Image (tube, rainbow, N blue to C red; front, side, top):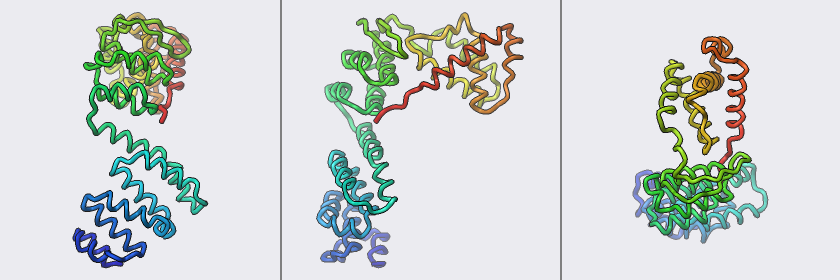
Length: 309
């Protein structure tokens, strides 16, 4: 069998196919399938595997499953992959390694499916259907990124459906942001963090824009000369704004309070020393007010959602 391995490594695939013709041993079948796969003939390789499934699975269950699903991914046969996943889940216990692989398999298939979606071209009607029917949050966000804010006005009906629908807050907020970019004039009902907002997207202030935001972002950078702290603090700011939108922080009238509160959280994330009491004194602010604001921001961030598959 070492000769098969050597021939495969030399990329002499036609010779390997000739030599393995008639060799029904697990090793012969595996190398024969590998040769066809290397030649770009994934369907033929898959046929070899499926026609000899019992033998190959019994020889090495984990290796068989990994190779089989790799072929399904190459061929973009995701529905078949889901069906086979259920089949293997119902087989008798083999080993802990196999069980662990089966536990991770749903995420692996979904990830491959999303990548296949991102890497292909869709027309407008297909995108509309995906926005309406997709159940995977990651897939929806991938679609929105594909559209881009400049083309959002072509999908207003679907975006309104998302923003007013039952998806998680992350997806619905993205949909709202795209409606704002599209300057949609239709009033929508948007629920978030236990609040109900009746808003007209074109009348909303886009986040991360305007003089007040730009001045504050500059102040945050200047106040934290350490690049790591500045970067961490800016992420806190950006994430907090996304989390509370369509509300916005009062960065104009509470400039210094937000500056200290967000800076303090940025330092905490990096386990860096920051004397909030001294900083509040220097800014002539109430320490309790800044602490309260800091805790409010942290509580909002702690409730951040996890995207669903």
